[in-house]
Length: 217
Length: 217
DNA sequence: AAATAACCGGGGACCGTCTCCCCGTTTAGA
DNA sequence: TCTAAACGGGGAGACGGTCCCCGGTTATTT
Image (cartoon, rainbow over all chains, first blue to last red; front, side, top):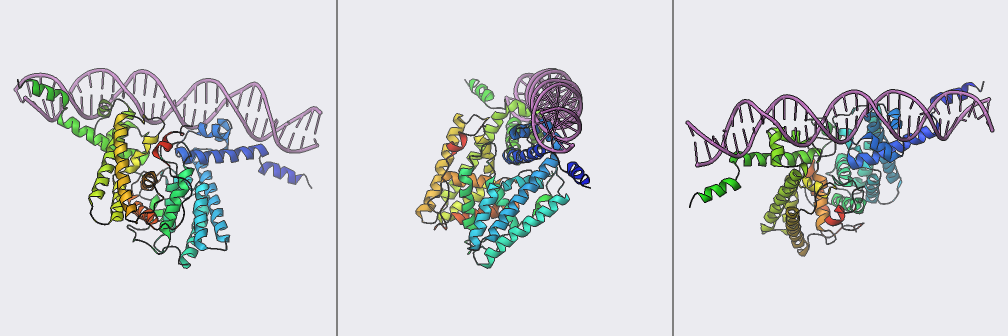
């Protein structure tokens, strides 16, 4: 009776090195997407991952599949960072700060392709991950608002978009020397988020859905 | 004796429509570079400018020449915005705010290619324009610092880089619907710049020179 | 430890895209 | 009106990305 079980395991579970390679590809792709945008040649991703190009094309039927996997994985990492922040028992604003800095380290800017035109925005995996992230981030922010530490006129998308923008490597520079000043700028932005608000904000809050719709030219 | 003068003028001054077209190309290129990066096809720039592709290649011997012209023009516009801010007689921090919002409208994020690896960073035109911008921005900031309104631990490059990053269109989105929230985020950042500083800043200030050097991978 | 099947990696063909020139036509300036 | 400068569109050539093929390698099973 045991024969059926290893048989099933063999079918459903790929070889260990295959799994390892897939993970390395996703990691490499995350860095490459952040540095060079979602159009980076897949051969370059393969080289960075230390695998042959065929391994990339075997694991992901097309570019979108890889992008989707990267986006999902980054959303997971971001969500975990938010959970960690929520687990903090101390100062609510400090938790928010920790979350923002952590999400930069988790390459939250890799989420940008999510709103790209050539991308299936409504893939079920994405919907689920996005909902989870938004809920957790909202919780982090609400707690800080309730404590009277976070100004009330900012929303989840304000935080996510600004964090992504500030943590992107400056255009044209392939380097990640960015780390030296990214956290400075994030900290300045966070200081601007503190209650009481020092000025009134122009414009309107933009939801993630707003970003997706009217884009493609 | 008059013959020599129109002859000289004729040599040195191109036709009026040629000048107009050149200007339209630079304008179109600025928008395209901001939206799609400095590698955007030149034929697309030509189409956006409403001219034939040959006109682009006639006016600019290579891509770098066009990029350089765009960068110089944006630095000029930014410098003018800083001069305008300095001309304000009122509140020094308000002048700084006006400058930051204006530089976003002037597409300061188009300056990013300036630190790209494949770009002659030391072209004399660039050096001059950059020096002028840095001097003027420093003056705007120093005035606000002297008035005790701007925190002392931020530098010119902090402001320029963060403004460029926050005013870039989010990666992957060709749209400039960004305008709806860019000024919000800039305002939040500006609020964080106000004295007294609410927190200590991590990391170190980065000069523009730092950005240029260790980049290319 | 040997057998086996999954997996890997590099090379190369195909194909789309960008660049840049050519040349007949248009238009500014005198 | 005349002339020369400038324009625009089409297309050749080259470059680079994608994706497949196949001989070699490695994990896994007994």
